[in-house]
Amino acid sequence: MAGLLVLLSIALITIYFRESSGGGLHQVQSAGATVLRPFEVATDRVSRPFRDAYGYFAGLVHAKSENKRLRAEADKWRQLATQNLYASSANADLRRKLHFVNSRAFPSGYRSVGADILAQPSSAFELQVTIGAGSNSGIQENDPVVTDEGLVGTVVRVANNQSLVALLIDDATSVSAIDVHTRARGIVKAGGSFDHVGKVTSGWKEGDLSSIYPPGIPIGQVTAVGQNEVDLYKHVQLQPFANFKTLSSVLVLIPKNR
Amino acid sequence: MIADIGKGAAVLFVAAIVQVTLLSQIDVFHGAPDLVLVTLVAVALLRGTIFGAAAGFGAGLVVDTATLQTLGVTSLLLTIAGYWIGRYGETTGRDRTHAPFVSVAVVTLLYSLGALVLHYMLGDPASASRVLLHAFPFELIFNLILTLPVYALCRRLFRPPPSGLEEVQLLG
Image 1 (cartoon, each protein chain N blue to C red):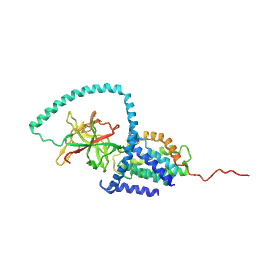
Image 2: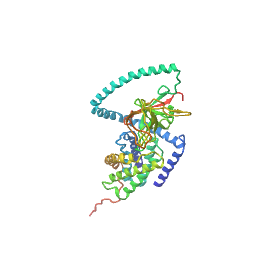
Image 3: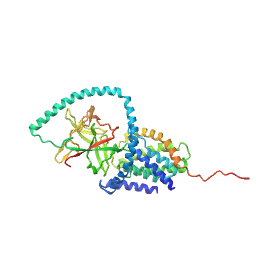
Image 4: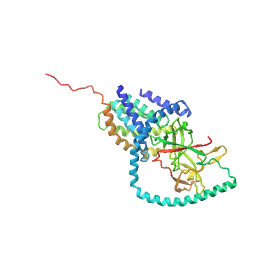
C-alpha cells in the first residue's frame, strides 16, 4: 500500500514535470486550487484581526525612533520630489519637441490586477506565493508583479483563479536592472555573485527579444558595492524596496495592448 | 476505522490550510513551523504505517495543490515520513513519552534532506546552506514546540488501539 503511494507520487511528479502548463494534471491542480481557495480566504480573514493587532503593537515598539527617521527622510524626499517634478516637465517638453517615440512604459502602458496573497511557500526551497487571481483575470506567465513599494517578482504559473508568483528573492528570479544615477546595467538575483545591480528595471529590447519587465519599476536601494581582483564585474548588494515579510496583496501588471 | 479516516482527513486538511495560509508567514532565517509534518507524525505514531502513509500522501496533495507547486513532491516526502513513523510507532515508540519529540526531530531533519535532494533532482535552484544551516535549526525548534499540543490533541482524537490485555477480577 505504502509502496503503491510512493510509486503514485513519483508518477505524479514525472507527469507534472513533463507536461505543458495546459496539461491534464495542471488542469486538475487548477480546479483543486479553486476548491481550496474559500478555505484559504476564510482562514486568512479569521486570522487577520489577530495579525493586525500583533502588527500594531509590534510597530509601537519602534514607533518613536522610526518617526524621527521618517520625518528626516520626508524632508529629503520632498526636495527630491520638487526637483523630479521640474525634471519631468522638462523631459516631457523636450520629448514633444523631438517627436520622441516611446516604447511601452510603466505605468502608463499597463493596467493592473490587484490580488490578495492566499498561500505562502511551505518550505525554505521556494520563495514563491500564491495569489488570488489567474488566467480569468487576464494574467499570463512572466507578468511582472509589484506593490506600491516596488518590484515583487514574476508570475511563474497560472491557474484559472490563482497564480504562483516567484518573489524577487527567489533563486529562480533574475531581473535586468539599471542604476538611476550612473546608468550602470546589471542583473538582480538572489544570493550568489552577480554583476552590476541597479535600482530600477532597465526594460531592454534587442530585436524580437525584450525584457519582461517594463523600464522604471523601482527595485531597491544599493547598500554595498565590492569587487574582487579577479572579477570582471562589481558585486553589488541590494535592499529591496518591497517588504517581503509583510506582503498581503500585490498588483500584477498586464500590458494594455495584449 | 472509518471514523479514524474521517478524523485523520479533517485534522490534516485543517493543518495543511493553516500551514499554507498562516504558519508559512513566520520567517526566522527562512525557518517556519511545519504543522502538517508534526500532525502527520502524531497521527502516524498513533495509527501505524498504512494510515501514516495514506495520510501523508493526502496531506501532500493538498499542500501541493494549494501552493501550486509541482504535484507529488510533498506527497512523496510525507508518504515516506508517515510510513516510517508509523513503523516506529507500531514496533517500539508509541507508548514512550519521548517518542513524539524524537520522531519530530528526526523526521524534520530527514524531511529537509529529502526535500533538498528531490529539488536538486528536479533541477530547482535550491540553496543547501539556506535550508540546512539557516532554516533547519529554527524549523526544528518550532516543530518541537508544536509537538506537545498537537500530539495531545491527536491522542484525544485517535485513542490508542486496545492492547488485547484487560484487567480481570477473579471471583471466589
